[in-house]
Length: 447
Image: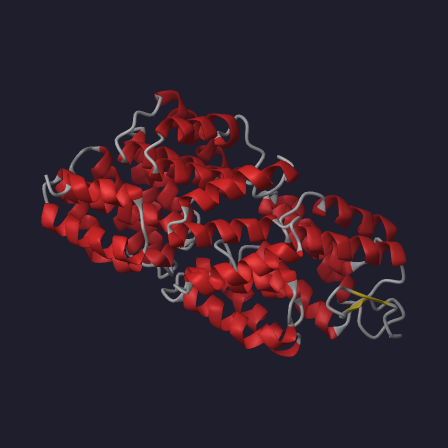
């Protein structure tokens, strides 16, 4: 096979003879890595210019998978696999790096997450600058986060530390490295690195999102609100993180006890009838924001709960990731849909018994606890959650997303008149970061 005429932005060869395909692919990768609109269209242009460009098919499969377009994703992944398998012939279209790249993405698209994680880590040992493969273990919805492991925050930071010399001052890598630091407790360092990355490329929703996490973890509510207000105008509503960025602004509103602002964001940006976000983002943002309103003592119109549950049932009809199951439990509990809850729990318990639920018993325990809370059985909620609080991390997602469990536990403690225990936990949280909401709860727990 002759030397490749084209390279990606990380100087890795691309097996295409088409300059147009290579350029479109490079553009698409930058758009995908920055969570910016237009990636799918760029990959379509690359495929149109060279229908046998395997990496473009693999990248297109990745975009399909974001939106749970399973059949299209698997078809594109299969096409990519077939193209890179042409070895030792005149039509050979894949290097060793491209074959490993395609196989790793295909495993992820097919939902074989443990194999995809192993493949990604193995691939990076030989090709550390393969940024698309590097991206798979990272992030709140990445392969580490959804592995069921308790130390996935640390694993992400360690992965970034290991390969940092290969990336230097790359805007995409610094966005991820900064967020990994933030999630692993190094909030000040994480924020500084993320801000540096954001300054390099403002058309980078991934960095804006990572920066919002750093502000959340640092208690910088005003900074986060200003960031969303001042930056979001440059980001089209079709952007994959558009709604979720507003979700962060809604969390800030709830910190300041502004339920009307949070509910307005829900109704105009997040609810299923108006959002164009991927199903996982849409469902989890809707369920968690409505639950926070409920748990914090604010009224939620019944139709909003009903619409969110109806959407979730369509998008997630079968037992899924623990992160999904937790949010499905919030919806079922809030709508008193005991049939839905019991059916999901039945499958979860079977997966646990069969050794097919890596996150472990924390998953059904959370589901039952949320149901107890919604039924105002606060002592049972406390009893169910307390033994598994340290394992909540295993369900994946970000710390901001998982904190809803600890929030529910604290409110349950207060409502069960377990005030000294609530005070101790709130004192610990307030020592970590300022929080007007926690301060209000602390006052309530002393009365």
